[in-house]
Length: 241
Image (tube, rainbow, N blue to C red; front, side, top):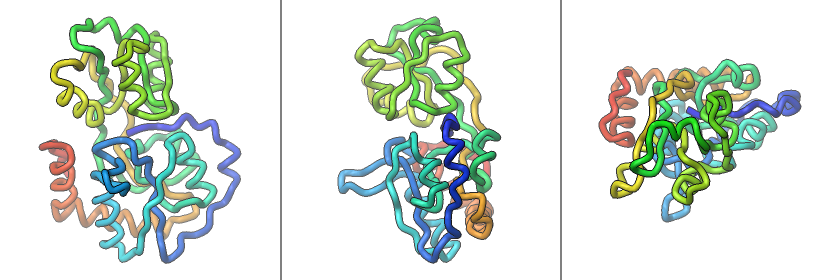
């Protein structure tokens, strides 16, 4: 769902190697329920389960790599891993630098969250967003004052501390915080439709890997297992695949 501001044009000139027998999956590990690090220090969440299943169907041996969001595209391009699976929206801007599989999660609306009792006008105040995301770009053009943070959790902390009036992020990410806040946090303002669904990011040179993963996603869509996995991690959401 998120979209890096592409200030990394130089990285495009670095050619990543063709994928090897062991495929390295890169993720942020900080954006539940898409991906997070569990109490055992392991990558977990919807995308961990999905990635493992796609590798099984594609008959690929896969390992996991954790990488900060703001360098996740440059490190794919430079060959530090072979696939991005990190809640990443498919966008035209990104597609100029890397390739994508088909979507494995439909477009998710972005929503504003603030302290309970705040009026809808806070969306025009000081709004937090994770740096280099489609939400940050939207806030910057909305007339609000944008404050950017390196991690999603820091955006939540900014609202709680009063540093920001609201945060804009994927609804699927914010919903957990609202539901578990005991009425402290609430959604405000309108939903905003951004991005075009979530896909796997692949180097432009790795068309064979892209095709293998697309075939595996097709299988999961056709047999209903992708819908079931989304229902498990996103509490009854109907993806419609």
